[in-house]
Length: 69
Image 1 (tube, rainbow, N blue to C red):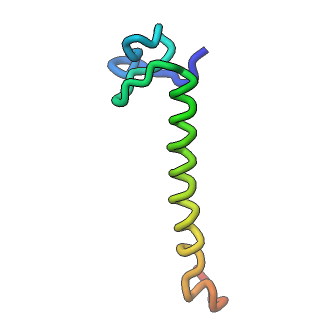
Image 2: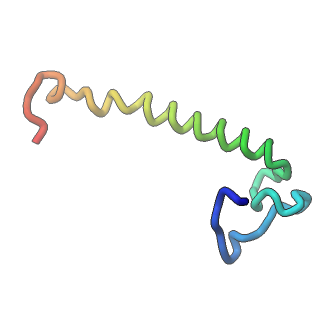
C-alpha cells in the first residue's frame, strides 16, 4: 500500500525501484532509503520552524503582558 495518492504526471515511479518509490530528482530507488531521507528532511524542517517559533511569540508586546488583540 502506498503512502501517497497521486495521479497524472506525478504517478510515475523511479526507474529501477520496481514501482516502489515515486519519481524523485535525487534518484533514490530503495523505499527504506527514501523513508530515511524524508525523515531527515522533515526533521530539518521542524528544527528550522520551531527554532524560529519562540521568537515570533516572544515579541515585546507579548512579553510585556499587553493584549495581543
